Length: 138
Image (cartoon, rainbow, N blue to C red; front, top):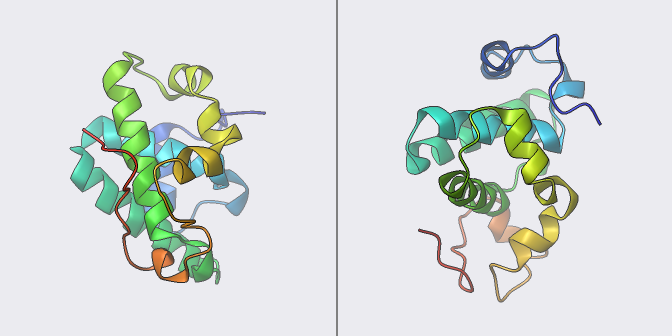
């Protein structure tokens, strides 16, 4: 899997995404992870989380798929990625991803292990943040 399209730099990826010009093929789940990593490179975790949520939500609405945005999953993934970034010293997306492939391969399990309830079945978790109750993020 190509983890970083060579024709789109990080800066251009964010610009196109924020301006709703990014081709949908570049914004699958891997694109979500890349966006999160990039925002966390430039902003504190709370601001990055808000920006990730806003950007993904806007893009999902732009694609006429607002139901695909899941607030609790997105915020939880931001926290997981932020915590992993604190422990790693990778200065580029490719290196970080290569050491954290489970973020793509086991997303559901990684997120669900933070909760005692099935947040994927809880409809309110799509639009309201449910805080993790089995894991404390630092």
